[in-house]
Image (cartoon, rainbow, N blue to C red):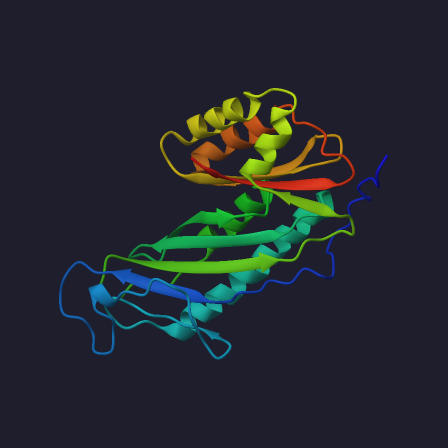
Length: 248
């Protein structure tokens, strides 16, 4: 039998968030733009950095860059603790996340994961709660603002983990049942009810799901992860496997 997963250990020292670019967009409802602010057709679509500081840009109005940076720093600390807790249960946890927070005129933010390859829905929920609990600067000159944040966490543990995409999973499942992957995909797409999403999950060497997560509307996450956890997967043999599938 191949090496087994070692006992979970909390607060692994190699947990390092990277990718500190921040993007702030303000969706205006009319009125003249504050001098120096971007016009609507010049709205930024990518994250940027100025030195070691997150860049902040707005479609309408003046933005307090330092206030945004302060809040991002607080949230990143909480996010790191979320991942630490997840690694205490499953040490191999690691991956990338993209979070988007829509902020209203009261400073309340509604976050969502636009991408995640962490593969643990409890950690992902903890991350979303951390962004939602923050009090954000109020948008100036528009009804709402949008903050985008990307973070990466190196995989923990010392076991080999293979990366599989949809094609690799299909090939493995096809050996036992040619229709198995298609049936699984149909169930996952059904959970999304017409929305787009992405699932990531870990299989041990016996084909058991050890952790699962999703970048999807929050109401669909339970359906997605339950579907994965109740599916019979082939044993990859020899190592753990991390599977990421984009839907639909």
